[in-house]
Image 1 (cartoon, rainbow, N blue to C red):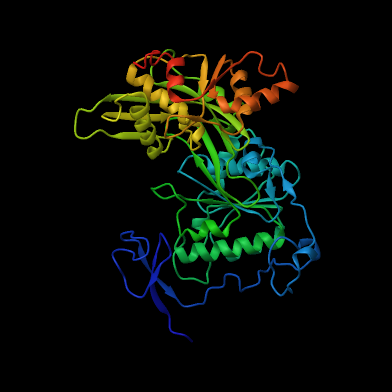
Image 2 (cartoon, helix red, strand yellow):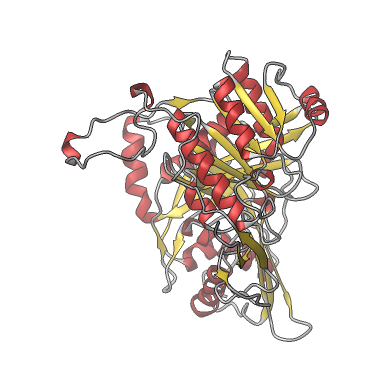
Length: 481
């Protein structure tokens, strides 16, 4: 029998070393190496699960091995079968629903609603006479019963079990042949073949590999609920996210009932879509009109407040961006941002100073996107610049107008994509003016030729440069003051 081998493994990146180190040599994390005893070889991708199958009906979901190379032209195309959860927000983020054999890793802060959303999905699928197995490693069955009793969905037909051993979960899957599997959470599950504790790098890698192989072999959609670290990333090695098909993050601000679900990885769809939920007493409910929700508490006539139409995937959203410019009292001036890229804001500050003569770089500047939304597209440049200028001049922007466009270093306003979709959403929310790149005017006019009344209640104002936008909003006069 081989002698057990003692190694030290970093719990952040998976780096292995023969001796303990205070600081990981790979990722630089302090006190992250944990002792592990390797007395058995890893079995990921080597063992054949008791539920594995070679039935022709299961082919196409995963690599079973033993095949012969064929030309790409000879590969038979199989369309992806989508399983809709009947939760429109979740299905939108997934790209149309769950894919057979697809493994979804769902992460988020404690109490954000990961288990609640998963249990709601389980109830919706069980109501359609599907066999759903919910494996809980954190809550007892009585706690799950209490949670299910508060939900609007009927979860009485969901199969629930409290289990933390991978081998016993595999036996349950072989016995019940579920159509859908939920593991809550992946950090609590462990295999008996490793002596390390649940949640360690070795266990996470082994368990996730086994579950992924099992799901793809059976064509069984699977949700893995994952813990997050203090930095907000999925706990465990980064390879964990590479092993699954889709990685979803639940985001939300403490004290607020709204949650945003976004995909950071999706092999079967776009990663640009977001889902907006509201947490109520009976569970999570999709928000039909997120734009109205984001603008619900917008202050009237407040300097530094601007409305910007952004696009997340295929969905246009109107969000409020707020800016505050104040004199620097202590130390050098600082730029603080929430929801937007800090480097982008610093670039816009220098454009305002160089092209408009506004000495804002010597002040403390704060920029925030209300509602917890993250804005990454350059189409928000014009709105952010005008919000900063509005706060600096202490003059409110027109309340009936929205602003979008990318800013160039010479002060020009560049065209953006999906301008028509932004304008349609703007009119739907009751705004009367839209200041946007002049170079988008031709596309808008082409759209209106076949839809003359589509934007009848909205005035489109083409903006060519920053100075024109500042004069149009009365932030500077025609002399450039």
